[in-house]
Structures are given as structure tokens and as C-alpha cells.
Length: 479
Picture (cartoon, rainbow, N blue to C red):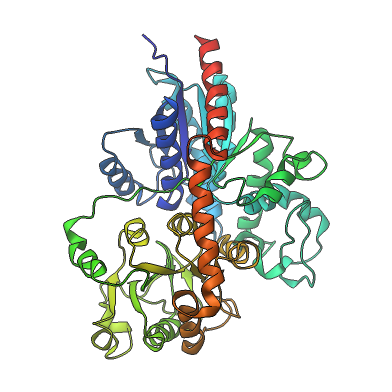
């Protein structure tokens, strides 16, 4: 007998950074809105391990996670193809597998939600006769740019980064040339063409869910709904701001008992957390300056480190130095011993949400991934914005110029090595200096607004309830 619950199928592109937001959306629909959920994961070289980690993290089991078989796209990739191209092409080639898997389910899905790289899979929902939505697991400004990018392609002549004036996105904050997303850095690449294809896919959906909330980006959300502004480019689709959706604090494993034991002994708000995300690395020269900057700041710290890039200047994405290196091999000589009383060096990975939620943590030096930003805001932690790739330069500008919850280096870290004195100054500003009081107060205010939006009766809770009700009514009409 078919279940009376609506059943949502969610499609995640490869990579933990895409899978986690999709999983959190699925969990929210299951726990708060009486859905059942199946998450289909487009295969990558790490997806099997990622799926296993996520399955083990759900107790009780809330969502079924299905890894779709791997597809070969090597013949379609050009030299230097980036993450947008890989994700987009993998989804396109996986569509027959997704169609077969969804058709064979005992409880057929009543709605399909794909992430931003999955717009080509919306046609599978059309074939099955079910509603289809796109989930943007980032902010509304990035969503606006992605929808408007095909129009910018016609309006702007030459490379975006060579322009002297900011780009106008109807109803939104203008976008500076240096803040364009990675696929827009070179218009001659396959990556750029795939990004345009992604943007052109959004209007084919029945609606767009976005991981922000009304109180955070009201003006941009209004432009996305206005048919005379971006609403016209988005085909007047319903926009559902449902955020902030973030990971919950987990039970700390025995692996990190010493770290959290040390944190428990530190004064409230006295520790800065440094992490460049799962894919961010620094050059050797920049890593040296960060180490000295932390030492000069005289602040307590936790630093997640990975081996530096081989190149001498630029940060990289999913590129690291020699595997198996110890932090002492690439950090300044004596740094670990000199800072042992005030800092902790953690290789590769640590439970970020647990660390940011600890009362002793009072600052976050972050690569500005949207997941990390939301985790910082929802814990009331001010930031040093250190963008590396993707849409992170936009995010850094949003944090510093519009929201006022972060400071950033004078020059982009991807353009110039940030020196130790500037790093020490930024650390002290958000942690202890009087001039950082406004930043610390603002992020506390945003934390409270985020809690209100997500709680029952709040704007995001209401919007997701509205989405769930419409989907449930459609499911009933099909029975």
C-alpha cells in the first residue's frame, strides 16, 4: 500500500560541499513536514566514502541515500575543466540512471529537487509527471547572478575581469569585476559555457529554494520576485528562502576529546578558528605569513592545516603539496612549540560545527564557503573573510560591505600574499579590539534573527511549510 506521506527525491552533485546542504534539506522535510526522502548522489571518486559518513551520522535513519553508478565523462572534458563542468556533465550523463532508479522505486517520488548543477535533470521529473524544483544551497545574490549571467553574456563585451565598472544585476547590489565567480574569469572556457547552461536551466523549474532568509537578504529576494526586475528572467518562479539550513552539532568522537578538553579550559570567546574548507589550500609563502600573523596576534587559536601548494603565490582548489607531510615539515621552524600553550594545530579535518558552537570560540578565519558562513552566523561568531574560489569573493563582499559581520584583507589573497602584520591586525580586531565591537554586535544580532526565521512561526519555517503543503496536496491528488 502506498504511503500517505509525500516522497521527495533530492539529487546532489558530486562533493561533500553539495551533498551536505541537500541532506540537511531532506532531513528538515522529514523531521518537520512529514515527508519521506531519498537522496540520489551523482558518483565521484570520493562519493562512496562520503555517503557512508553521512549514513552513519544519521540516527535514527532519516533519509535513504542512493549513490548512482559512476559515468565516464573523460571524452567530454577539455584541458583545465573545472568543478562546474565536471558536476554539470556528470549530472547530464547520469540522467538515464536517475530515471531508471526513480521509476523502479516502491514508493514513487511526488516531487524532485535538484541542486544548482542538476538543472539538466529537471526533464526527468517532466517525464514522470511530478513537480520539480532547484535548490540553491548558497545565497540570493549568487542566485541572482546565476540567473542573470546569460543576459550579462549578451551585454558585456570582452572579459568581465577587464571591465572598469561594476555589473548591474537588476534590483541587486552591483557586482565588482574582481568579485565574479570562477567560471566567469575566462569567457573562452568550457567552464564558462557550462555555467551559462546552469543559469538557463533555473527558469525550467516550478520554483527555487534558496538557503537564506528574508531578514538577511530582503532586497535581493524582492528583486528575484519582481517581474520587472529579476523575476522576469526567472520566469516569475516562486522563490522559497528556507535558510539557514546548517549541520547540527554532533557528539564529539574520542579522536577529538583532547581538543575539546583544551577548549573547555579557555576563556569564553577567546579562541579564533582557522579553516579554509575541505578544498582550500595555501601557498607555502602564504602559510608562513598566516602562522606568523597568529603568533603576533597573541590570541588563542585552532588551525586546520593541510600541506601547502607547490606554487609559490596562489591558493588552489583541491590541490596540495606532498601527501603524508607533517605540519612541522611546512610550518615555520619552532612555531608549534612556541604556540603550544595558546594554540592547537589539527591536520586536514576537524568537526567544524562542534568547534564553532563552543563558547570559547570567538572568531573564524574562513574561506567564505556559504555552509561555513551560515555555521558561523548561527553561532554568533565574527569572521575574517579569506575567499579562495567559486563564489567566495562575492560572499566575502556580502559579509563585509552589506552584512557587516567580517573584516577582510586589503587585497584578494588569490592576487597577493597577505602579510603577517595585516593578519595579526585582523585577528585582534574581531577578537579583542574596540574597533571590532560593532562587528561582534552585528553577528550576535544576525544569530538571533536566524533563530527567529527558523523557529515555528518564523519566515523560513513558514515558507518551507507553504512549500511542503503545496507538495503534499499534489501528492494527494495523484493517489
